[in-house]
Length: 292
Image (cartoon, rainbow, N blue to C red; front, side):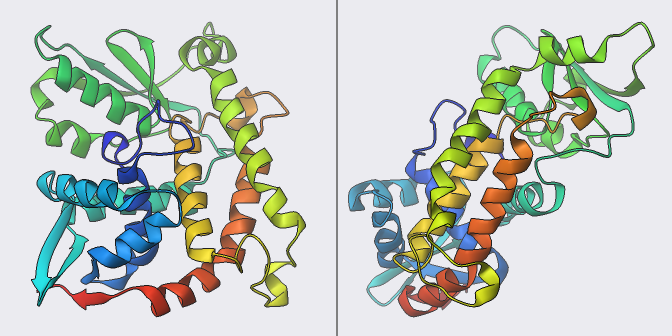
């Protein structure tokens, strides 16, 4: 999931309408093929998490202009669907959440290093590259040399930004004289990353206390029964904000009380409880059409 297209690093848990909207399309459209959703339905669902109608309409227009959403008219109604670019963004986010997860306890000792040198006048492109690298797990070892644990393929990122001639990528292992623990502390703000996980866990653990386990088959409780579609939208959006700056550093080089694991467990438990109720509500509420 692309950083600036989805989540602003400075925005905090109460995300911008665009972040929430892409989370909505990821929840209810991504796996439905060529499905489109009416603007009225988007307004309804985002209104449940505090986004006003005017903000929704302007965000839809802006996302169409940015190539993230397509639109088509059916009678007097306008419907919106995902573009191929948006699908790539959301599929990457889906893999980050459900496949790779927040904990790396199988690191093989390799690093990906990326060096770049851009003209001073390319401030916007430099910002885009740094932001995309952050989402991909990189941190600034030095100003023009970034590093990420494991083997990270940034080919698509570099090509999409048109920077292939300005970037060099290497795979490496640290020599014995390198203190990896210290390098990690110097490169990434571990306290800030940990604080996001701790805060997420504190906000969402109460949703588990009042509900039965997912295996009971009940959909009641504050996390799913009252407004499961809104709850799940907030949950996924907040989790994406939480993991956005986490490079999935090797678990053996992190503090023993690293909070990513417990926070991820909370996320997945609430997600499991809200999944089916949110799907049922979506089938009842959403006005949809097939893309032409």
